Length: 116
Image (cartoon, rainbow, N blue to C red; front, side, top):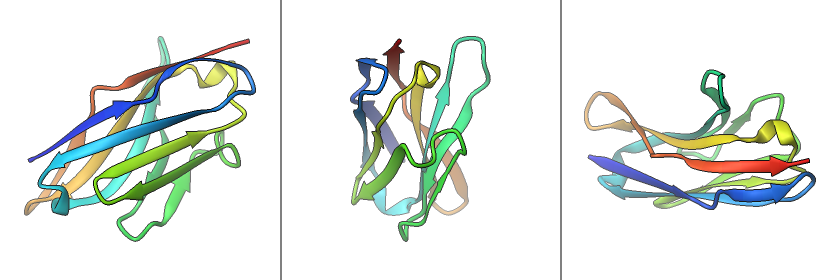
């Protein structure tokens, strides 16, 4: 079993930066891909970024060039620069694990609010 805990959310002005962290615990060696998703009020949850176990990243078009995903052992990070009000959302960390069989694990989310 893997557990995920996000941190680093908060209130920031447009143009500012935040760094989200995702701490994994439990059977961390079963983690394959990790990802960041977000859900704004009244909207569906959407993909922000993914990072494979080999470090390959993938980003939503809306955040390319502004957000950077990285991971280090049991931690994953999302560096968010040039934040916009439309980035306001609850951000979730997700891990895809193999234990065996693929299983998705989600964190509880952290709120990011960008003021204009």
